[in-house]
Image (cartoon, rainbow, N blue to C red; front, side, top):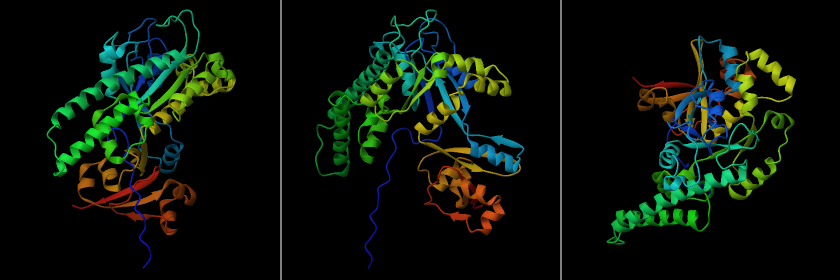
Length: 392
């Protein structure tokens, strides 16, 4: 008999098990958060002012996620309706030192951060005498340390409370029942979370967790478990010339404190000019200055940071990108369209985008044997094109 294949345990993802995830724009006051939100969403919902706490209540917008595959599918099918994937983005009030103890808008701010699933951290690296800085002078390293410290301190406070409650309820636990053993494992997991924050001085997302531990971490809804994408707001001049004195220091700080987190330089000043121009003029202006808008890259990075992927449904009536979480199985992916598709799931007819592009038509893909029938165990791949079959 051939040896049995080793079963590789599927890694549970940090964060809410949902396809409807949101990313929040975070930073200290007056770094360009609301202005960035406005150009990203092409709205004036974000209140951009030259003083702290202009933003109090969070604003929300759905941002189309650029995708050349989606554009190609629309060119091929010429549908009546085109619906791309979207990233839900939230503009959150500025955070100041002491927020974890309630300073400024601290408690409200941190509850708003807790309600999102990922973070765009806007970091100011431009000098402008007309735009005050809440700490007096521009120093992005200090600003990043303030944000990290306040999020970590609040996590420690929440974990201490959770651990205290668990230990009180766990005093009479034995070793016999499964429930008692599960409760002890939960306490051990929360103790590990506390150690990561206080002794290892790490953000939760940077530690190694087993699947059982991830379930416990997700239940705590911790701020430092959320993925972070650092967005460095430069002057237009520095962005165009791709040079700024702070960029190497910011990169070094991220590498030391949160290795692997993405860093994207951009310029709100340039984006504000481009967003008000017609599409053709905006393209000409980017060629003229020798720099491209960073918004498509930022949107795609935010979408990916949340472990979101998309699959497509295509036809003459509609080409649509459906957002799902990485690791989603076929029935649950079908259920994003309608719960009946999940409840009465039969199979999916799946082809890859690359196969369709190579062979040119659905008929040619099918003739080449590349159209596959997939059942309930199938895990969706980014860029799949799907047709679902469901029972009556």
